[in-house]
Amino acid sequence: MNPRKLVYISEVKTFLLFILMSQTSYALSEHCAYDHIKEAMEINRSHRTLYKEGDKKSAVKIINRLIFLEKIMLPFSRKLDRSTKKLVSAGFPMWCEDFVSMDNLPDFQINSDIPSTTYASLDKDTFNEITKSLKAYEFNHSSKLYSKIVFVLDTKLNDHHYNCLTRHFLESIARSLKLSIERRPYITKEFERDFFKANKLMMKQMRLALIFVRGLDKRASNVQAQGTPVLCQEMPIIPY
Figure 1 (cartoon, rainbow, N blue to C red):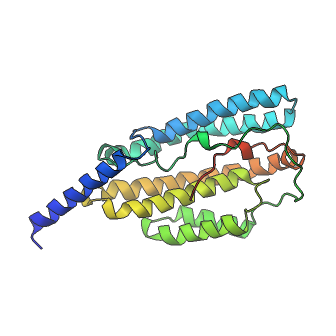
Figure 2 (cartoon, helix red, strand yellow; figure 1 turned 90 degrees about the horizontal axis):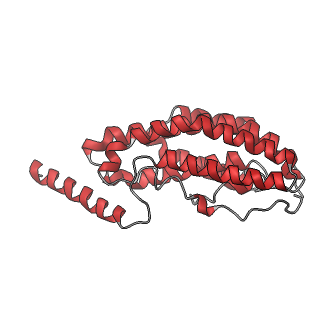
Figure 3 (cartoon, helix red, strand yellow; figure 1 turned 90 degrees about the vertical axis):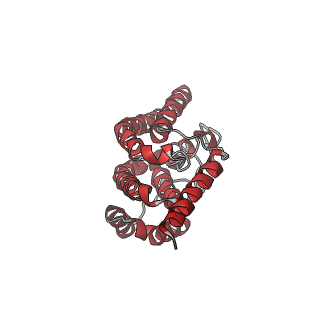
């Protein structure tokens, strides 16, 4: 095919994708990852007040640790946003679409039903397998990694009383992988390097987050076992 025609087709595809994205509910922004963390922190501070008013001191301690973790994540979120600056300018809603709105939170409850199940963390072998896959991530691993994570979510993390942070980050990873696979056909050559680099950075940061949240899930399990769904009701529903 004529090289000029190939360039024209490529430009048309990018333009059509831009039009499609601009008609979605996702606002194009260069700081979506940062905004998501800030929004989560604000909600968690308000939830902390509700736990205090309900005399749930143990839940307050858990939320304090969550907010501290989010503070640590803020500079990393800025780096994520910088990695997609060119892509966002070209009309790709990177991260704005990946990070779901905090409006999707479940209704807040001081007390809920006491779980009939007991806490069990994600087994070490499975956890290590996932974190190793994230560390070695390349874009061509996306489909296989997505299937692996969805299997874990559906079979090993299907008790929604516990492991809420671990499940949240795995759902987030799965969503991001799925969206990146869907975006790939529309990424023209001039944006390929930024696209692959941004996705790799996302997986790297999600891996670090998973390592940190594992311990917090364990700490929260004692509170959750008493019927206070701390952490679980601070995590939005993520379609993946």
